[in-house]
Image (cartoon, rainbow, N blue to C red; front, top):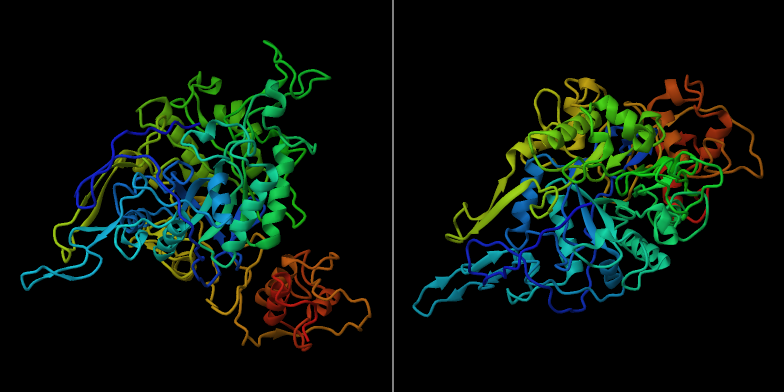
Length: 633
């Protein structure tokens, strides 16, 4: 629903000290890159309408969009005006804990094939000139970077040749990790195009088929499965189209038609979760759904002036079809997050804005039946993937404030549209930039960002932060969120019980920090909705719980701690819950889903000496393919 404004101004040389503008894309080169190493302990999962970390601690994703990878420049925009490290650092300092990166399937496919395009001068201002200290010819030294020192990681050893787009993305993710920010990508369009979001479907452009769209996302998920900086995959931005367009428009129903978004999203989710069972899968809505106005109405029929067969919504905002046809991959729903988009009258003056609207009228006229019911009825978590607009002092600003407060009050995750200034119908959080090099040893060097402070102030209230001290809360367990923030471990160790956060009216809670274990990943995809649940352990853990012996049977389903007939991450979670909170989840626990004697016997898969956290870890390693069978021999 956005228009991306572009200028025709070309960039000057690397020695220029202040600059703005864009320029066309240039050549291609073949290069490869690898994902960043990580403790891999920050994966998230869903229970009801909320998201939790691996220990069952609640989290809140509060971020912003940074587009450009979907465009011909092949990089997040405004890296032509500022240094990436400076921009990411300031985003973290401002309390944004996750960034949504729009990207195109066409670019992903080029990476998958080992043919990533080279960055262009129009998408990235990068230079390190000279690339090393050199003699000035008069007995002095010209220090490296004296004439050009911006985005130096994005050039080759010669200090001027730009690297390729895949390596560039790896570097950007590394910088996010450095400052405690998480990320997810959204497939903004099949083809690389600054206006590609206007195209209805996830296939049909640039040679992208449904199968290739899935394949490229699976490739990306497999590449980053050991890097929890990239925590989620937004499968397709704003699938849309109006009902009368028929097969050319995205619909949501129970069919296996290619344009059925619910069916395609389920297929894609299953394929991604096969290679990374810990990734969050974000599924957007469609534009129109059948209204049920008259018997016999069908998708593709002409519209009627009255009693229309269709109900409309914002692109990507319509989840009416999810009531009867929810997204249910074979792996379960613990990684599914529904992601509506919602905008105000500055983008389009919809009918629900035609009155003196309030939160109640917005809910009654549009929000609730279209998307808000999913969160309100505890069906699944939601993340508003795009919201934002101009600060007009009127209707649009009023809408932004109402939606912001609704998200705070109902624990709805969100990513604001957007950081970029060049979104034509919304504007951005950034206003302008400058970059200076006075002397290579001068600490004042670097990027100066001017923010739209009034707009940021509106958003800032909806950034996750401690209730009294106002410290921004990150999603990394070890790395604090910028200079003004704290890590997730910091929050649950030192703040959650004493002051809480700006969720649920400042309600305090207890929680358990996560111990980093660099030798293995101990993650979950399901947890009971409680603020005091489980803890992970290293392989040296020896804590056990006594169980009553259940006689061995030849057909015991080892690993099936919850006795549901399958071995999955829920079994590992129940073991850890039984150990951490035996009064609730132990053999005589008060919870209806507490572990049973049979379940405890099934769960004893490592060592044969009673239930321990090592059993939970063994099940996770089995699910990751590290063990071929249970029990572990």
